[in-house]
Image (tube, rainbow, N blue to C red; front, side, top):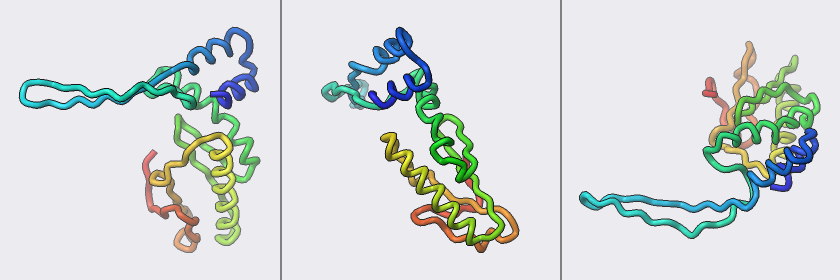
Length: 156
């Protein structure tokens, strides 16, 4: 949680407010519970509670807000390489160029820089939700990015 708290501090959240976030994030434990039915009886098995050392509590009200605050520096990290659209935990990188060759290079650098950002911030990219879309007259000539599916459409 140190990285989250450091970023909140960099945003000017200090004093009792940062202490409140610290108490919200630290000293949490979680477990897994599996329920199953046999006949008309329901049985439950629980794992041993383990400490949560990173991230935010799943399903929490504050989780999405903390994530947005945590990742709000991503556009600056990309430093004008592309336009960045962010909504909740979805991010879209938009690039445009006059030639497909320039677009391929710019897109590769933008995506690689976004991967670097995620790695530096202990974030995992869900590759099954990572897609490339091309628009325009020459969209069929745009080279595919390495390890990214080229799609005609996608969902947000």
